[in-house]
Length: 448
Image (cartoon, rainbow, N blue to C red; front, side, top):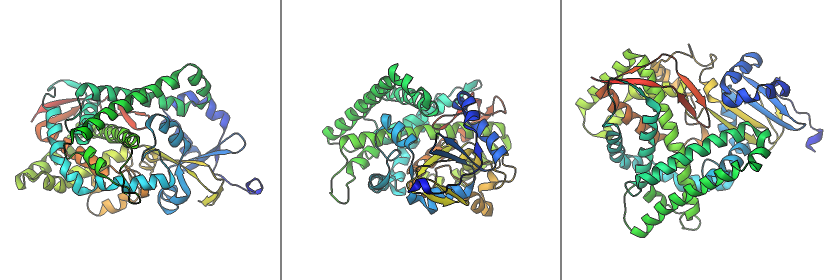
């Protein structure tokens, strides 16, 4: 019986102290995480009630253990499977166990490099179109521009031109509203009853159903048209389960598409905003990117070849994601009792790893607060990748990694070749929601 076992946990944060800071933690947990890591070390714990334990870590050994070395004993937590699936359904982001494995095997081929290469021209056309009327020589709020761009890149990659703009804009608004409420639910569990009786849960579930109906209409229009657009929707419609030879049900396809929209557009929008803001603060690094891009353009006009040669540009993007990882935190629950770092933990312990803090942990990074793309070049790159989790790690690493890097590289290339970017201020502000969002990012674009 587990009740007779002796469990040990890392240094413990007082539940009273946690509850005292709960509202501030909801608004922005990162300063509190840093404070607690500085006080307790790279891993600390919290006990809720008699049996529930939470562990938070910025230790690479913990990240490796739960995501790779013993990943079979760790599954997505209830925070993701219960709260998020209530609005997003049961797709790759929220599924666990055999069902997740089955979906991953089904969808993975659609994101193979060769398939992504087929989307590049369409992706580039969307980027050029979205940025053709970029305001010049005045301070511009950057995130709305990048958010609109990233959303349309995903929309056109998924649906080509088969969805009208009004439907897509409505979909984007629903995604934003649902995410903002979801954060409240996750971070303020003691308000669960109020959220229910006030009708807020029902309201947001209805919004989720509305998003389902928008996507369903687009999918059914494609199926009924009998046309091929060579986009991600076609690729997903063509997938077949190995055991049955059948494709996904319409509802399963809707759930996967919703998750692709959220994971595919918001993380890229965040990363591109942070990267351009950093380049606006470091003109000498921006100039190196420009030099690389112009040299590549003189060597080849093939877009795929250009992407493959963007060594320094990719290093800049990686360093930006080190400092500001869009997926800034992850969590798992152990299925059975487990041991790591000398601790014996009970089953269903919630373990969070802050990639934001791990990426800034001085144990792994020299001058961790410094923006230095050289970390991801030549021999340094091998060492950096050991402690780098912009797309998580292990079997559940983000399926859209290749898509995101293509999109960010093409966007950066288009902007830097055409404009000098200047940031309005040195300070970069953040809002850690489900993803790490930039706040107050203003830049000026001036013609080169």
